[in-house]
Structures are given as structure tokens and as C-alpha cells.
Image 1 (cartoon, one colour):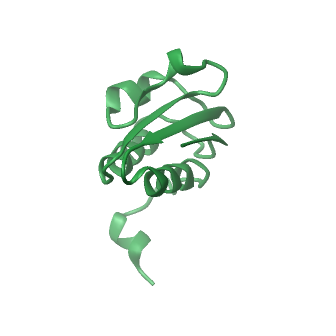
Image 2: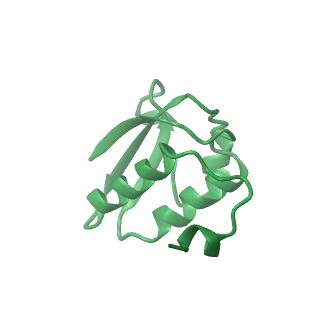
Length: 100
């Protein structure tokens, strides 16, 4: 399964957004990869590695391709793509995000 999405967080895939992406990818029983949409399969890196994800140097507004394989592939793809297409609050506390 795969999707192409536009990265919405202002920081791109650096620092906090990259960390959240890696944490999200690691929650599922799936192999998730990410790369620039125009780099093909050679540009894909493992989404469970902070070094690999931040090393892509993806900026706000760029398109990325997300590929997932495994028993939780669809759920992993949904969660990762939701994260990529949502702006990240700069001054957020994880508990505050969960508040009603």
C-alpha cells in the first residue's frame, strides 16, 4: 500500500515532526518507508529511524511517498499520512493535545 501526500508541518520532517513520525510508525506491525515522491523506490528510507527520516531533509510543502507493508499496513499508512498532512503545534504538551 502506498500514498503520496504533501508535508504540512512548518518544520518539514525535521526535529519534532520527524520524531512524531518515527514514534507513529513504530506503533504498528508494519514496515513503513518514506521518501520524496519523485525519487522512486531508491529514495525510500525506513520510517522507524529518526536518522533516516530527518536525513531526507524534506521541507514544508514537499510531496512524499509513504509505503507500508504488513498486517497493520493500512492503519500505519492512515496514521503516518494524517500526521504528515496536519500542521504541528510548536508549543504543545502531549497531555494538552489529548485534553477534551
